[in-house]
Amino acid sequence: PCGYCFFGLIFDYKVGINYQPPSCVPGGDLAKVQRAVTMLSNSTAIKEAWERLLHKYIKMFKKRAFVHHYVGEGMEEGEFVDAKENLAALILDYKEVEVDTY
Image (cartoon, rainbow, N blue to C red):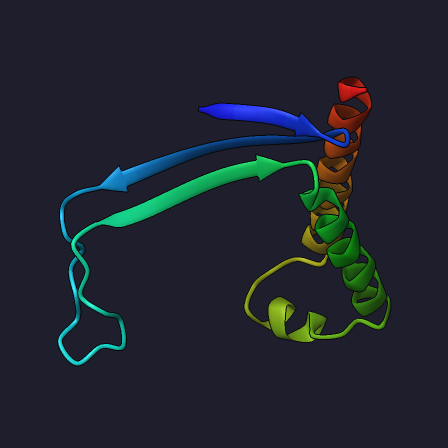
């Protein structure tokens, strides 16, 4: 794994090259290639995306949008509140990591 800090944002990443040709679906839209590259990364910059998602989630939940669909499938309403709290905790975790990097 590699990592660096840029403007207080932490970036951790790992890149892997696989020299075994990936499988292709006959008639699919992906080109046949000899190798594949995969990159996994983690950055505190994702915090803003989580904040936008939480803001939209809160607005929709206040309007009870789509709640009846999930409740009808067996989900309990308390799980919506739990999900909101879990996402808020995740955002706080990213904020703490940003503060610790300065």
